[in-house]
Image (cartoon, rainbow, N blue to C red):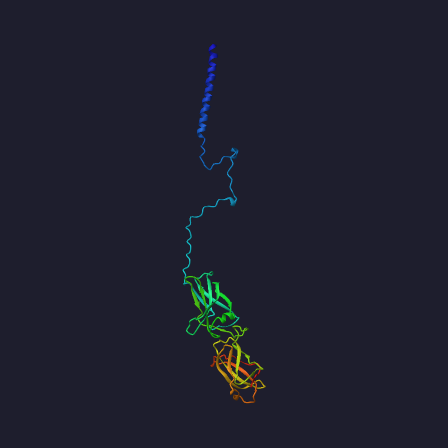
Amino acid sequence: MKYNKGFAPVVVLLIVLGVLAVGGVAYFAGKSSTPKVADNSNYFPTTEQNYTPPTTNNNPSQQQTPPPANNPPQQQTPPPTPTCNPSITVLSPNGGEIYHVGQTVTVKWKSCNLSASTLLGITLSESVSSGAHTTSLPVVQNTSNDGSETFVLSSTIVDYFAGPNGYPFKISVSSYGPGGVNDWSDNSFTINTNQQANCSPNDPPSIKVLSPNGGETWTRGQQATVTWTSCNVPATTQLRIDLSASVSSGAHTTSAPIIQSTPNDGSETFTVSPTMWDYFPGPVGYPFKIYIVDSCAGSGCIAPNDYSDNSFSIN
């Protein structure tokens, strides 16, 4: 009986070891049969693991600007090559114009390769028949190169020149400094001291007798003076002065030239010939008028003219 009591614990121990052995084999068999999870860098843990995914910045002002494309730098266009040397060309007055004392003269020009800040001077010069300019007077100094400038043709300017009334003139426009350039009017223009002050460039040519203009008395053998003004008649124009008998009706029955040809300078003095009266019929003191006319001839002659407004007498 002692034997049986010692054998029982051994049996129990063997049974426990058997159970443990079977359980261990089953455990390792199950572990080896479970598939492994592949390594995935894009794998994110579940929320149960307290993982916070990264946020996206949707604010355009805080987004980084992508680097510029690797484009080659744009080439700059070179400045244009000058097409002309520095120069000035006078546009007006450029020939044929007629000005009078007190009138505003507008000088116009164009330039090439001169900046607008270039300072220019304008000179008025006498132009003689040979083309030389014997006397010159600056009329505008230090004007900008903007293509136009005006000045008043004062009596002081006209009196500076020694030539007769109507002497031909030219304008010169010049730049200052070394290498300065200039240009003259291509042709001459006229300055008339006797031109009517209210004459505009678009008015037709005309002549106006000033004296004798009515009520005067000439005496034979003495000197008399005829004066007149004109509008747009060049001072170089040759005029004829006639003495005409004036009847009561205003008609002029007989005329005699007393001056065949004189420049349009506004005045002419002559001697009243003792025989002048003999040319006219009628009694002494017959009413007369002065008649002035452009002495031109031909189909293109404009021939402006004028009579005294009223009669005068010759004794």
